[in-house]
Image 1 (cartoon, one colour):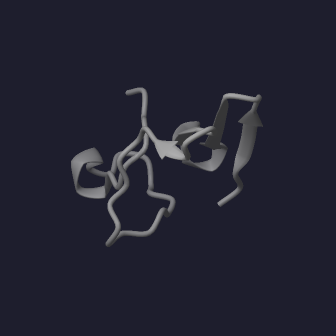
Image 2: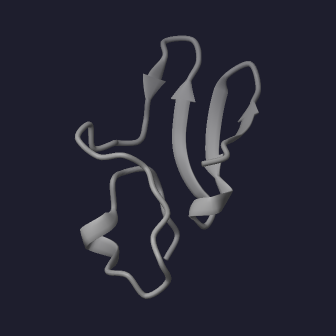
Length: 64
């Protein structure tokens, strides 16, 4: 999936436009703290519209 990166001197955000604009990562740069949880056993992939959200959520931040 494509990743768009927005960053400044304090934060780095990674956004996945092909996953509906999911915010995949919010990292505090000075200590490399990741603020969003990710399932380490799952891969990020596209899902079809109408698919069960809970069965395919692997982390990040989605706005439903």
